[in-house]
Amino acid sequence: MLIRKVLVPIFLLSSAILGFPAVTEAQENPYFVAYDHYLEEPGNLEVEYLSTFGTERGGNDFHSYWTEFEYGATAWWTTEFYLDGQTTFSDSTVLTGIRWENRFRPLRREHFINPILYVEYEHKNAADKILKEVEGHDVEADFLTPNAVARREMSNEVELKLILSGVHKGWNFTENTLAAKNLANSPWEFGYALAASRPLALEASAKQCSFCRQNFIAGLEMYGGLGDRHRFGFGDTSHYLAPVLGWNLPSGWMLRVSPGFGLNDNSHRFLLRWGLSREITGFGPMVSRLFRGRP
Amino acid sequence: MNVGAPCVFALLVAAGSVSTMRARQPGTSAGRQESKGESVYSEIGKAPEKARSKPNPLEKDPDAARAGRILFTQRCRECHGDDATGGKKGPSLRAPEIQNAQPGAVFWILTNGVVRKGMPVWSKLPEPERWQLVSYIKSLGTVPRSSPASSEPPAAKDSSSRPR
Image 1 (cartoon, rainbow over the protein chains, first blue to last red):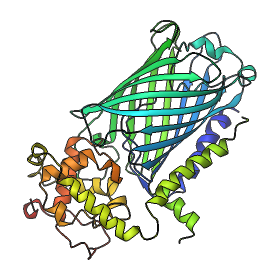
Image 2 (tube, rainbow over the protein chains, first blue to last red; image 1 turned 30 degrees about the vertical axis):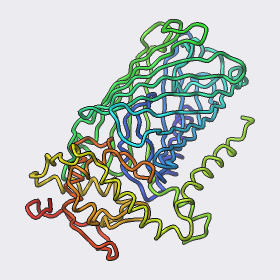
Image 3 (cartoon, chains in turn brown, green; image 1 turned 180 degrees about the horizontal axis):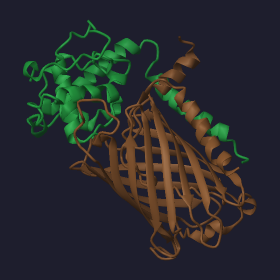
Image 4 (cartoon, helix red, strand yellow; image 1 turned 120 degrees about the vertical axis):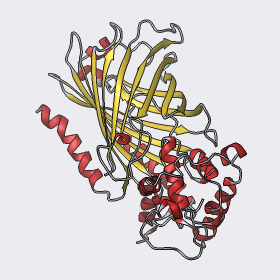
């Protein structure tokens, strides 16, 4: 049963992505929570499947997953659609929501620090466990509610982020500040994410290879909540530290993995994240051709 | 889920398609491609003196252009064409404006992109990889814009015969 719930979505997604012949190497940073300042190349679609296994003290462990469709509308605008779900062990599997995210690059040129503006709309239920961000007073105990109850509590949320990211000597450094508002008259909630990563080699090999060091990117991310408008700060919320590792394959696939560790008693003790992505080049023009009836 | 996920997805696809179609309207493909190329070429002239005068640190590395060729296939071919003479989205990299430009200027445009004209920022490639790309691009040589070369990515020339 469990295997079916976990593997079926992976299988379906993989089959769908494999159907597209035109792919390119993604060369993404391996972050799960933090964003850097790089947007999707115009016309390309990146399909990602990401998973989180989390432990739960006093309750059932869970496996949450989400699929992202990330499209480069222009060189300064990337738009992304998410589908989220989760399986709580000894409970049930539920679809937890959808997200629509947009990132904008306001500056034309590359600078030491590059700002990106992020706007997201979320329609989700309280059973959402993907931990794509930590905000407000999010704590481990929030996940104790049984799925049957939590899924009935729907929320519409707007999330804004200021992403500040730069590159120095091959290292990417990024800082994300988050402000989220449940549209049902809740206070603004805040959160943060910090991350750094670097390819294991900065020079490309003169031969095609899967295991060359430049195909691996390693780093670290830290994220957590900052309370809300009434009680701002690091207390009464959760924080995590997570090493990250990404592997860009010449075939166009990218694999990433990240064990995460809770930094206080409000946090899940352990999170294991992994993901698989593939970038499809020329997706936009392909759709355009379909609608215009060109061969 | 009572709110239509399909509606949101349709909006997403429509937004993307509109932006893509805008770039492919009738009467815009060839002519606008040319003018887009011109505007991208003019961008290279905006490289600051400090950036232009930067020498390619991998100039004497015989493997640089070969590695650059692999990078070109992975990152640039989609827009600039198999042989770098220009594609549906990107101008020719074998035009005199690029081939006669200083390596530092080509590196600068790779780093900064031409975001408003559709060329993304490539600073996500580490600096040595960007120089490898410069080595490859500069090894290709000039091709007049009206005569496309072969359909395969040209092999990197021997570094000794590479134009500087």
